[in-house]
Amino acid sequence: PWGYSKENGPATWHKDCPIANTGVRQSPIDLITTGQTCAKYDSNLKPVIVSYPAFSEATFLNNGHSVQFQPSAGNLSELSGGPLTKKYKFEQFHFHWGNNDSEGSEHRVNGKMYPAELHLVHWNSESPNFSSFQEAVGSNDPHALCVLGFFLKVGAENASLKPITDLLSKVKNAGSSVSFPGKFDLKAVLPETLTDYYTYDGSLTTPPLAECVKWIVFKEPIEVSTAQMEAFRAVDDGHGKPITGNYRPPCPLHTRTVAASFK
Ligand SMILES: NS(=O)(=O)c1ccc(-n2ccn(-c3ccc(F)cc3F)c2=O)cc1
Ligand SMILES: [Zn+2]
Image 1 (cartoon, rainbow, N blue to C red):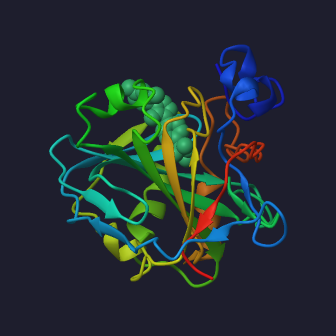
Image 2: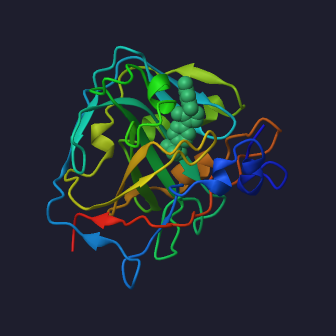
C-alpha cells in the first residue's frame, strides 16, 4: 500500500495511481506570491463562510498515514462563500506534519514549508450528480470537493486544538480509533475572519489523487505549541515507526492560475 517511506512514498504512487504523473491539476502546489506565475489578486473573492455547530459525536482515528476526525453522518456543518457557488457539507478533517519544525505542510508559500497543515474536507451537497461524499470523490466533477487548508506554526498552545492533540496518544497505533469524548468546537480553532486566502483547482493529495478539489488555503497560520507538535510526531504508521512527514511534495502548476483574495 502507499505511504510516505522511500519504498511506498509519493514518487512511487504513479504505479497504482497514474494520475500522479499524468495529472495536470495535482495538489499540493507551491503558492508563489511574486513574479510571473504568481497568485493574482481577485477583488471578487468574498470571505469564506463556515457554519460549524459543535460536533457532538465523532470518531478520531489513525489510518496509518494521518489522524482524522470524522463526525457521525448526521452532522450539519456547512461551507459556502469564498470562490464557491454552492453549499458544501463537512466530511472530515485531518493533518499533515513533519518530524521537525522546518517541514510538514503540503502547500508552501514561496518555497517555505510550515510544520503542519490542517485540512477540512467538504463535498458539494447541491450537485445533481451525487448525494454522498463517496460519490462526490468518484464523480469527475471539477469542484465536487472543497478542502480548506490552514498552516500550523509553532507558538502559543492552542487551547481549541488541545482536545485533539491530547487524544493523539490514544491513537498511537495505526488502525486505532476512539470515539471522541464530548463536544468539539472546530469553529474555535479557526481564525475569526476567513478573508485572506489563496484558491485554485487541484486534487486530493494522496491516492486516489482525484482531480475534483477546489482548494482554499488561508494565509494566516494557526499557532500550536511545541508540545502539541511533538504529539503528532509520536503517532505510528503501522510499521512501528512514527509517521515521518506525511506530506506530498509540490506538483507542477501546468496552465493553472492561483487567485488571492488579498493584495
Ligand atoms: N489531503 S486531502 O487532499 O485533503 C485528502 C486526500 C485524500 C482523501 N481521501 C482518500 C481516500 N478518500 C476516500 C474516502 C472515501 C471514499 F469513498 C473515497 C475516497 F477516495 C478520500 O477522501 C481525502 C482528502
Ligand atoms: Zn490532507
